[in-house]
Image (tube, rainbow, N blue to C red):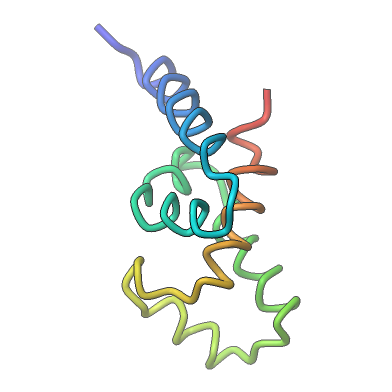
Length: 98
């Protein structure tokens, strides 16, 4: 029987291996579109929220623009955000650090 801890570890390994194949912007965008779960593996983490704050600062977004982004369907988010999220949450994310 799997524990949630071993499932979490297995998921991290699975998505980490997939992410290593995404070495172009198009690959990173495809990873984002197809692997939403990869960005939310740790239910205790505020990583997505923190990433959105950093993205908003980088892009000088107003609160209204941030709310509009959050209302978009996953695949409808702008490519610029997908690339930023990939780097922030997957490449440099706490869940994916050894």
